[in-house]
Image (cartoon, rainbow, N blue to C red):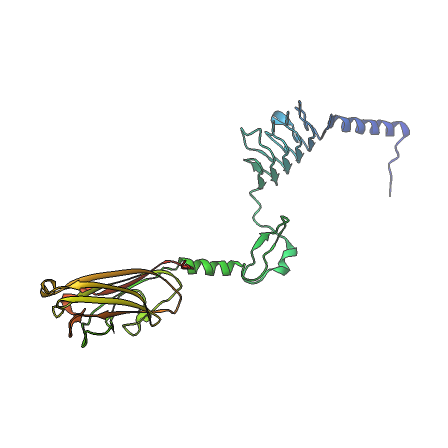
Length: 324
């Protein structure tokens, strides 16, 4: 290999020129350091700044009175005239125009622009985040990362903290439950002395027919706080006396009310009554409405006279409700 021989005098001249160039591109003033052409070239009272790169912390809008900034890359730290304790890593990283005083923030990557205090900004061309050390810890359902008490980011413990599990829980919370049945068939009571179940919810208005499979017993499809209501149309066979209405949950009475029926109203062909109750239910709980009439052979629901006024409705108001 051929080597070019440099005489002693020429060597000294080359080294001196390189030293001069280096000196021209290094600025050390107080506790500040600038390396690169025009780096930190407008500093006035700022302290503890480190600027490395062409016009890093310099140029027309470089750091002047700000302190504690780190600016690495050509034109890094643009418009950070008065800002302090910021970090700029990458070409043309800067503060947003007009916000020359922002502090405590970090800009990473070419063109990243800080817009607020205590902010981390990553360049817009960055579209993924890779930490291969976490890959072995994740599961197929998408483990959620969490901050521990020490401020560390790590996979959340247990498969319950996964994207799919959270999606499932949210879906359950948001699932609407509202259903209603109407009486299309009249029910005549053969005895007036004891409660008898209303077995006449036979026409689905909206909802799921499976929840009223027996036409008398409603099965709760999901846990929560429910509004249960029922309206009744009584026929002309009802005379003076109290009509008693009871709601049974899982075979036991949980609601009881009475209302008076007299001959005048009964003679008009229809007596309306509406009952409503808020009740905490679990999935699978059953409800039945019972009635005691003052008159034998009283008829409820059915036909064109009473069918439109005898109706059962159930609407879930909230999920996961626990009664006080």
